[in-house]
Length: 270
Image (cartoon, rainbow, N blue to C red; front, side):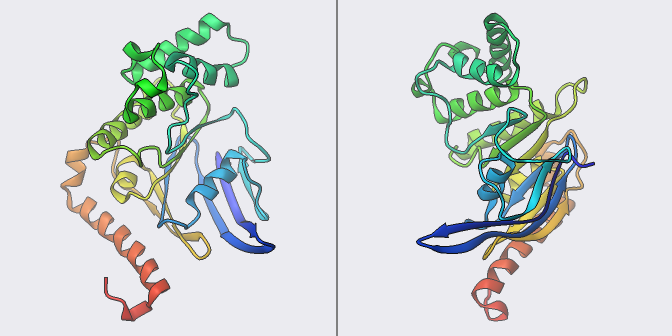
């Protein structure tokens, strides 16, 4: 049984008494401990798909399941990191992380929650900022704190909606490396199952075991591609290989083929 399974999923929105399909007949699986990226152009339904997995929206038809059980609402079995910093502004960084622990790990004392928060702030290199408020941190630091909160919840599943989209290129690279190292861990504990929404092809290749490419009008699975590189991964060793260039060119070709089909078919030169 797959950890996450999406099967024949249709999602519909209504606007001014008119309805339109956002996702059409989506099907794919995510195995336990697998890192899967969902990519596609703006408007293809990536965030809508994640909202289904979060339980924030229900499908018009089809199903989305975790461990064989239908997703019918939000749950503390799923950690989440959004693109825009989602820390509570009235809480310190430490309290933000401890709050996530409180929601998912019932029965722990206040002291235990703070100890866990401190441990994860150490992992993301923010121990000196534990008593700062979010507005006192840079964007990259806020996102590190959000990742610390999601990981400290110790959920089996981590859902991430373009978490590095608003971060500059240098810090984005640092955050990708950090996420990968935390996900891979020390080999003693099971890896989280990750669904990672991004529009960045290089990011998807570097992080993922598998890439699900969505096409829009309406959104559907255009292609699923397995990333062949072994782990642990070295960015510079991978990016200079013929295998990487071939995979990247394949993904780019698929992406532009999808665009060309929508705006002019064979007459379009990209």
